[in-house]
Length: 280
Image (cartoon, rainbow, N blue to C red; front, side):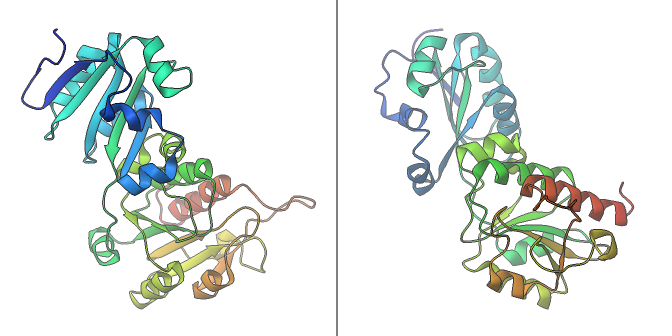
């Protein structure tokens, strides 16, 4: 295949001869997370996550692959509705561009989907609705695992508070294993305000908060429409967000252990929701 050959109406293959191409800069600046968010872009790493991106409705801008993956990913990209550039290079050149060892030699550049309005998420969710909200969760790695747990255990949407990391940060996408591509994201200007709005729609908001007296998860009622609200491991939920919730639950801990990691806590509570709803 020649340099710059048009493989199909939607896929153009470019064999990299120079790392200075402007279209490659997002791959060379993957640690500049704020810049990517400002541009509405994200990077997906690994063969599996890139495959999941290509199978999702999320817009794909370009692919960057080692030579051995060219034909396979060209075929996958060719099944997409948008025009995609497939950059191909030797593994050593890819690692030079990315700045770290690439064991699989596959990267993708996608466009962050627009946030979903709350009204649309409510209308699309089947009863009983299940939402997950995060407040003050600054760790992209933990956020990615919460996203993966939420998608795996039946959540209909993710509400990202104004003090939380963005779920399309590269490390969050990586730790979600691409589950973020399946989960609608709501980005309210005020998480507390949108929790109060959920209450007006008869969606119970239940805080997972280890620093207050709360019910055991098994004693709370998750059978109806509800939203589980998770905070940071250290501070938990902000006072304003906690006050906006209908009730709080706390996973019982052995003496001397402060709390579970938020990723573990989300898995435990989301499983309890499924158990009460007869899905587990």
